[in-house]
Length: 503
Image (cartoon, rainbow, N blue to C red; front, side, top):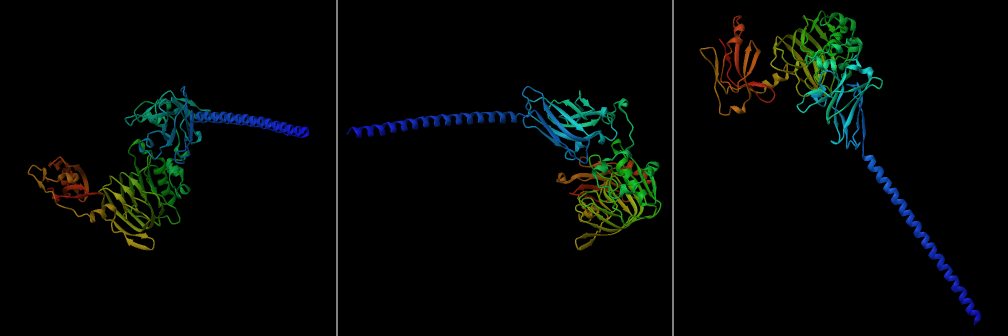
């Protein structure tokens, strides 16, 4: 019995020892788990703090890679307020997306749109590539800001770092900012900037046209010295000389300074076979139209090929606001273009009459306003002109029946005589009125001399107009003077009254 008791006590003690050990291990496990939990909580707290710090942006930088305007390479915002937090900042390139800022006189590089938290007090920095300034002295650089009324003014108190190629300024608000040449900017407003004047030979640098457009074979052909010696009136006999005129107009003429003149006279037939030709005169924020004279003197440009299917204003003269074209032939031209496409003109304004212009060839791919001679024009008279041009669309061909898109629209939009014009004894002209007159958009008096419009004047609030002073100088030479009313019908102006012969 005593032996059995000793065995029982032994196993009881052993079991108690095991239980105590289990309790100890359980306690240690709980303590270890608690340590793990506390460690994880500290890690989560640290991560939260880091995330909060990361949401505070005190410096924001954007690389600019605009091949058309490569002067500006980076733009940066830095907040120097107590909060040191720009919120959700953004810097976006506006070049060619915003017409007004892209056309600012003296623009250097791209304009940018800047946004940030309104409580921040940031410094704006433009970093630039000195090699792309094209001769503009660094000391001329300023920063302009678009004001609420849409004008631009210098921010002021800029800090220029010529060693670091940057210009910095504290800005008062978000909006549109750009870097500019103070000499060009202030001179255009009549401010004396002679202290900042400088001289640059533009032929030493790439022009906006060379940066922005397809120059085709032009730069391989051009003789810059010949261009310099002959501008602005050129007498050409070779493809090289003709390329020189394209280069001069597109790259060197500064149309931002007002009206310009370029003269082109052919002295021989010119064969452009094998060359990748491009339009002379282009549009855009700072584009160079072609204004002046093209006189073929009876000569012919043969085998001209322009291949720009993704561009507009595709023709020998791409864009113009005043050019006279006479006595010229285009033979076997091949034009592959986009909008506003023709063989001689793409988009032409303020030209009254082209005479003895004869064309043959093909136009393909183009959409929108297409004509055998001109894509888009406004009241241009074609005198003694001919065209033998087909439009190619895949495997199909059709003749282009009209010299311009406007002629096609007029042919398919019959004139009406809803209004009646009457010549009064005092030489003035009276028109009738209609109850639905408001339905006639942009009602206009149209004065015409021998097929050439000489005046278009608003008639919406005017029922009597005296054209005698306008017609007097033509009447004495026996010219045929007529007038009528026009109204805008969707794509162009069409006649909406009788034709009155002014005698």
